[in-house]
Amino acid sequence: MGKQRAIARWGLVLGLLGCLAFPALAAPESAQYYVSLGTSLAVGIQPAENGVNQRTDEGYADQLFRLLRLTRPRLQLVKLGCPGETSATLMDGGLCYAAP
Image 1 (spheres, helix red, strand yellow):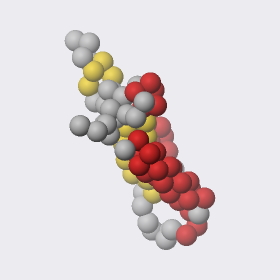
Image 2 (cartoon, one colour):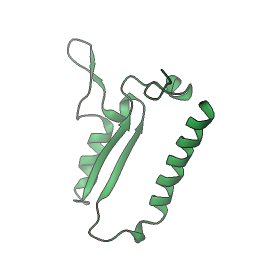
Image 3 (cartoon, one colour):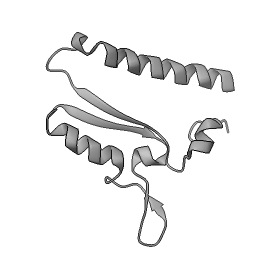
């Protein structure tokens, strides 16, 4: 199962790199995407006043998205991070995609 997961991840990475390498192939009126991948930081997880982690729209991906959108009005943010994920758990197979 770990090998299939690794192949799927590499496929995703190579697909994203292909999209970045050939932006001219997209129609001028097509949507543009900023994809935020990775740990809980990628989805904006931050502690609330009571110390419990929660999703926010104030994470680094949200802040960068707002800046980029000033010059790219068709830009859309897609958050594909995993709440609760850390660098260690991600390298060990990931929490969101772990086998039951």
